Image (cartoon, rainbow, N blue to C red; front, side, top):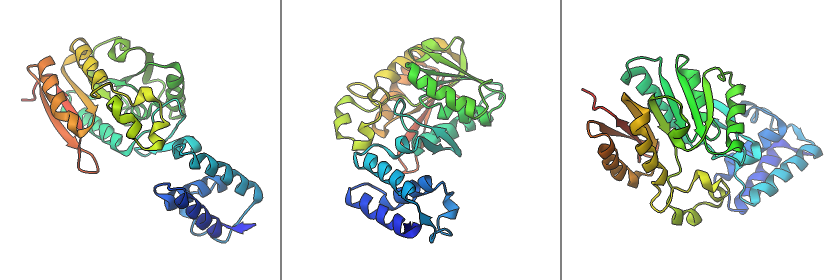
Length: 287
């Protein structure tokens, strides 16, 4: 039996040789998972022996990773905005940049809205990561979490129950805001926004995520256009829309938004890489 430090080094080398990005970090995460060790213990336990059974489980994980299956699907979970959400190949893997959508929604709810007793639509909820976080941080809010596939909503339902917010999050199936039964104060949407012809150029891992959650049509804006049309009837007079998108799309969507909401205004927030990422659309321009 090998020692933990040796197994981590060996796993790191194997992942690096296979061309996996962040090989050292992934090696530690995979070994921690197999050993059921918290991250803070990994350095204190360097002389622990790794059993044959644990090594076999690690080897099975590595085979999946060599095929470029995303790490989050292999582990079945992902950390997102301070919580752990269960992840399956039915849904998009939550990204760090999407945490900015949660940040902005919470900021708007606390500062920019008239009350915290809000009705919110999380459109394209996927794993439910956004809806769960909003429900945890905004206990007075009523949230509708919408998607188009049962398998996706099953996953969201699991995460919503696991975090104890099922009393405040209502799941709905349907086309964007059509599935939301009443007007809302806040629309939060991380919709597919990658142009169709760009999908084959993405990382192999990303191509293993559901095409439905990535493909935004010829210019990436098909669903965002439909959402803005539907929002005319579903967004309250002082309502706000928060959208995640590609930086290049921001000016186009700003222009579109003001066609739908001529009395409105927009603002843009950057992601961790300093790129324009989150567009805020105000139905009525703030005074």
